[in-house]
Image (cartoon, rainbow, N blue to C red):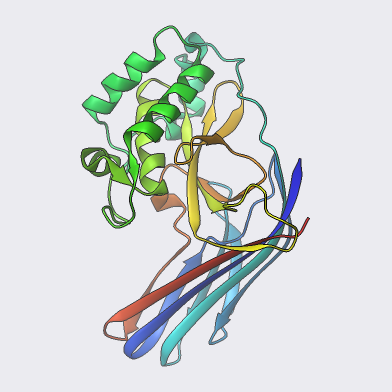
Length: 280
């Protein structure tokens, strides 16, 4: 099954006093990869800026722009049309011996190493080792994802953008970013290369053509067990045509949708809206 989706992502900033200049990076362009094709993409800013586009180390398209005129409001509007497809079945060609071998550890080391958001956690690592007993790597991934889905409560507001996997686990709740980070800690603890994916999720599986839903950025995991395949631990479902991929990396720090700095401006307020429409 394939879907064609239009994504409209608007981010607006307001400053208490005029900001004199700002520098920003946007990771808002959906990628073309094994299960998705970006048919059209565009990023606009108000006030208008000169934009530069490049692909970062992780393969994500980045649009950078800077503004050198006083402004009290700044808006970034990203629109795209993508064609998505079902995700492949879990890859099962790699054994535990191969995953723990020198070749895989060397080639996938960045997706096996702890980070600030996904630090080593003794309790989570122990649980992951218990879950993997008697299972092949792919089934162990599914067991970990299911366990995280059952153990954590989806609860906005209890964690923040800088919360680590350990913070989320102690709270036993969080949002999709936290579900993904906890899952990554556990998978890496048992030697499964795993990366963080940011994107969007159309929330209605039976959406009619032309139907628009309000959404927000979403996150899930991509794992290597002989080949890459993805799973959504927040919803406990395989990644499918309703998922729109944007960026991948070691954790949220590598894929933040919009980040930057500004001078002046005093206090600032942020307003974000995301709309997804099924076109076909």
